[in-house]
Length: 220
Image (tube, rainbow, N blue to C red; front, side, top):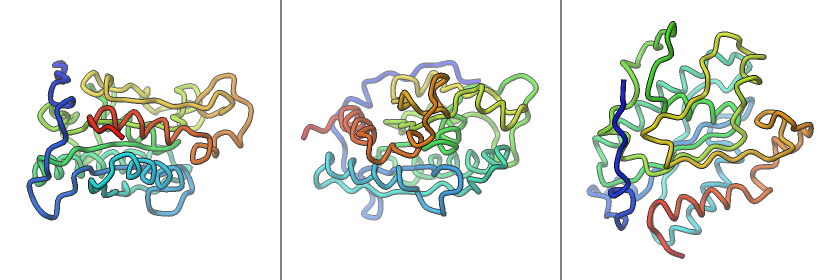
């Protein structure tokens, strides 16, 4: 599987112009949380707004990952297939577009599985995937923003056969993994279920947008 670590030089260069008129400067590929209606979800919208504020006149276009976001956790695989295809398409058709990946709750699991660099022993890839994202595609992803990512023990409670959530080496330095301390989904000591719904208003979407702007080499 993928073992090379992409250098940070490309990511730290000034943001280029998108090569085609229909290509945005930045594309946000975001997966919503469980039970949210189709779209990028409330957390995704808050993150998108914060990104646009920080990126000034640059175009930022969202892509809503297509998957059920239901209690059937195994169907996260559908989101991984869709997100992977979108990233590959953007890298091919809009090579100057910088990609920001993200997800909230179950959607954060989609983002993590999309960025993994190895298939765990005993697991079979879903139809539509041949393997992890190639390094040549991964270099187009500038940022991965995770909100309320389920801890592995939580995932095992709802799907004992799910693989661990491991961000690949090609994406580790680009990733901001945000967990409210009281959030029981991501924090082993969390006990406040309301904290899991508070990412749009608890300042963490702004924190992620600041991280993204820095990675994209944009100053406010």
